[in-house]
Length: 150
Image 1 (cartoon, rainbow, N blue to C red):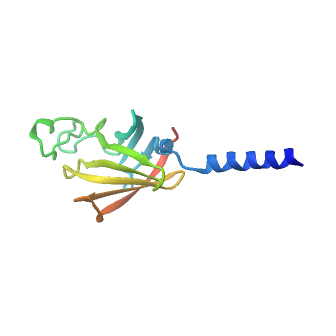
Image 2: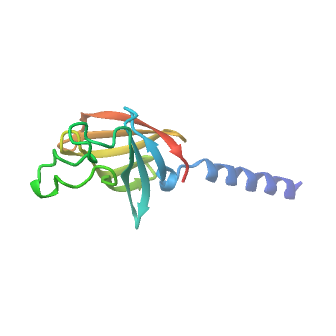
């Protein structure tokens, strides 16, 4: 009887551990809410970041050349391509809050960088909230859908 109880407790604790979210759950390829880009999230040291790995419209309609970061506030980097651009960075996972915090998100459409927090709605859906002045109430949440697992 003791062995059976110990076995059940071991199975229960294993199940609970597996059910807990891990910081690495964000790793993978995600489609943004507009469906215009895929962002590959990776772990870089102790931080998480993502870069644009696919664009629905990769070429500038005016020039036929790859889209460039032409709205960036720093003129020197306006010639870098958007495809391959790291647009989310600096996140650490807060297990108590079950979210990735302390990061930034860059929007190449307007050239602005925002504070950002990321949380998982479920295993295949991220809520990505960009905001200004460190106040998440002044922001917007985009829903990203997993495309490729880790």
